Image 1 (tube, one colour):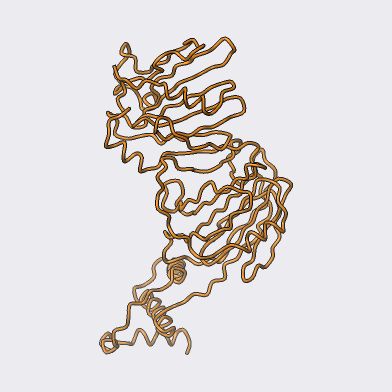
Image 2 (image 1 turned 60 degrees about the horizontal axis):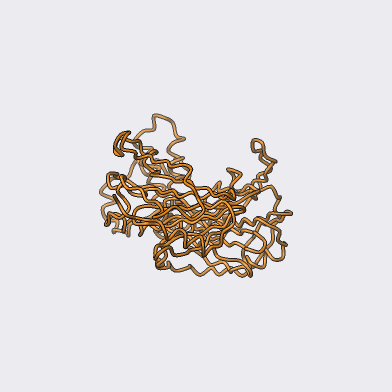
Length: 413
């Protein structure tokens, strides 16, 4: 039957002839099929008649009915190489992208598959970021080797056409069972990119690793969805290890930064208590630390200025800082930040950042993070709705440093 004969048949059909057709289950066309129909209508002459529109839609319905009321579109998603791409002030990158990807019915849900813990590595974070305000389409797992400083990051996200991976190493492909893996190793970096189901996997390794080791880890991956874990009792939540020198997180960093945030549950607790949230209160040592002299006092809530409510939000975040020095040149700085002021309608989620991995400690029963930097020590803890921080430039043991922090006086005058 020619196309003109089909159109003539539809024009001659009467509405009552379709009334006897039994009701069928609701037809759910795939998003790809709907897009094709939309493109077909969009490319038709601008003044398409109502009759022609009905004919096109009826033809689509006939195709669906002939397919058994359900259309299953067979899509073979793949990764393709798109050549090199030049970033400003950076070397050329090799670009890979996803093609022919299917659209998931549940695009908001991202399966969190399980990657084997590399030997000698610490699991820094295992974040279902699809439920997070930082990422909308990803699950992030990250491991750190304290002996070598190597960092391995695995990002699992929903695959879609055009999803890209840019890397300075040209990748090659291999088959691991039914999965095609694109991978490559440089002197201090390695990358892998593969697809499974509706998910796309990106693996970045900052450090030296062999191709055999990289593929061995990928081959051991468990594609059983990881169950959601209950929140722990700790107040601090590890965020991630990020490069501190580049906007492109896919590139190996010259230096790294570790970040911690307070858990959201902690902010809910702060909303219910007043401790440490009064902007008029400043806390200091009960007595000047032995051998030190106060050299500078900075109080942004001085009554000689204007009230805390009149200050801009950026100025209200910091409360006070006191600097002490001793004869040996050591410097001690006590600073404090109001995380959730009593007068404010919002709060600040301030990260604790450092070039070294921190350690969770207790300061008089309060949750804290201890970080030993190259030439200084830092201790951050929470007193109610206030974040306290003590920095020591010089040599001091962790135990003595915590004992010094425990001499802070929280009396409000």
